[in-house]
Length: 172
Image (tube, rainbow, N blue to C red; front, side, top):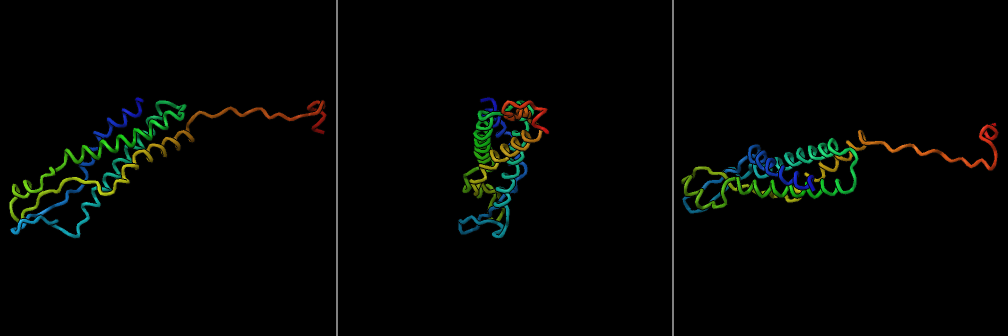
């Protein structure tokens, strides 16, 4: 439960990083009361999604590594908590990023900016499949680190039926 809640709380920090690093989409209001993108061929909207993917991937990798460092012996419960916490953290990041970013009232922003002056568009996540990047990153790093540095199972003793023969005799 602590892993799930911790991941969701880290979504707040991830939202801050997303807002800080993501490019802004500039909009422009024209005299005919329409709002257009300033650069119709710009890549800022894709850049916002890309930065979201990179930020959530980094947070997912860190969460998976932190769980391995905290609990060497994993288990199904920790893996499920990582997966669900990753989704929760990504959703928190997405929703807070939209709330903290430029407002949704485009008409008021256009009026405040004035005609033919750029103003930022509201943050949007166009590729909602990006919400799965955090849990996938967490699970991949947890699996890799557990496989590399986790506890090893003891090698079981090999049972060789001898049929009444002593071990020294059957080797001859």
